[in-house]
Structures are given as C-alpha cells and as structure tokens.
Length: 178
Image (tube, rainbow, N blue to C red):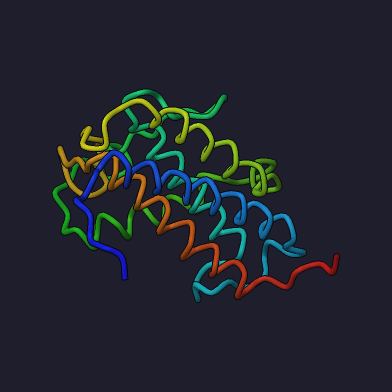
C-alpha cells in the first residue's frame, strides 16, 4: 500500500469534477439508448423519463447556484422560495417538495431531449465551477432557508445523483439494441 498523503481540497475537487464529467457522459449514453421514457425505472414511483427530468433539475439547481454562473443557455433560474412557499418545513418535507417539482420541470419537447439536457446543464456547471475555490459557499435553499454547501460538496452531490440515478435509469429502462 502507498503512503497516506495530506488531504488537498483543490486536487480532490479537481478529481471529483473529472469523475462528474465522465459520469455525465455515461448518463447521456444510457439515456440515449432508452427506447421508452415512460418505462418504469429503479425508483418505484418514477418512470425513466421522470428520473432523467429529476437529474436535469438537479443540474439546473446546482448550476444556477454556482458563483461563476453554471446555467445552460435558455435556462431560467428557479425561485426556490416560491417552490417551497417560504415555509420552514422539516428537511424531509423540503426535499420531497423539491423532488416532486423536479420531475415536472422538464416536460414536453425538453423531455424528448433528455439525452442532451443533462449534457448541456452538466457542462454549464463544470464551466461555472472551474474557477471558484472548493470551499466557496453555494446556495442550497432546498436544504433550508439560507443554507449553503461548499462548492466541492455540490460537485460531489451532483456526482452522487448522477451515479445513483444513472443506475436507476439503467435498471429500469429497456434499451434499444445497437
């Protein structure tokens, strides 16, 4: 085994960004191979398209929160106070409300582009998060009023969401033969 080295937050954030970029590429490939966006997913109450829409909303939320601006062209920021009615709900209630909304944020023609929307929003997040320090606070109002997370944590959360829900899509989706 190698020697344990000191933790370098800048290097770790860079590694997480590389992993996120690779995971987004795999996600886009997986979604592109889906034959039916209404097929059941690995999330019992969501279709494959619902999971994809949720991920697109996660990318929009964190992208809009990045200090350098990580919003894809044409995206409008989400008014989280309106979504959450400005109420002081318990953490689980807030996340449930945001998750319920997220599925409806990508509909119609945009849902038909689920293979490209996460790619565009993921690329925008990666561009916007390239400059700020890993400890830069990123607003995360869905966690509670005035809440923030460090940029490195936001990047890690996006990576985790991408991997978990990419698996949900892969598990539930009948894919087209190549």
